[in-house]
Image (cartoon, rainbow, N blue to C red; front, side, top):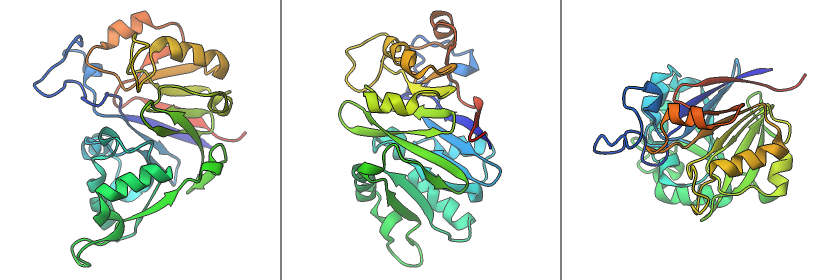
Length: 268
């Protein structure tokens, strides 16, 4: 089975340009430097999975012409606002999809925090105006590393250290998405081993002392074990100009950009 994986957004929590039209070191004339917050769409012929609904979620779906009713489920990596706070746009998808609840998946702590903030989406409010539009599915701790299926797409959840919390990475066949992450333990590396395409958070850039994000050298070191043929670095800040990164990165490692489309394969 062939999967289409679209980088809906590759920016860090501020996006590029940040508020105030701040471009930092990024060339504003290079369209690849215009970055919305991190999100991913994984699509088969019949299933569309979204990973994270950040503040730019509506814009991202419209830009990529992904129809609301086609969205089958949402996987959450963690509960930080830049990965969650477009969640209310799932209400529009619920109505467009004939009032069918949308399945959302994540760690218990992640879904607990999200549902606490957006209780009306999970529990409903006024029956007429605010029905419950989301159906939560906790990924149990002992299920990490074990595949489950959304529609016709098998998903392998991977536990990751995000510095101040635990986050979930996801593997789809020979494609894996690890955002946000500071460290990967041996179990995570073993689960990632053999992927052909790896999209990974590199927001710390050249600074190994960042608390919550991996820096580029750590990514290069991890890939010695994973052996991905192509590594795409995401969660890019205004200090990470596309062409500069492209020149600095070794063969097989690339900066991501919004709208980048990658193929993945599952099975023989």
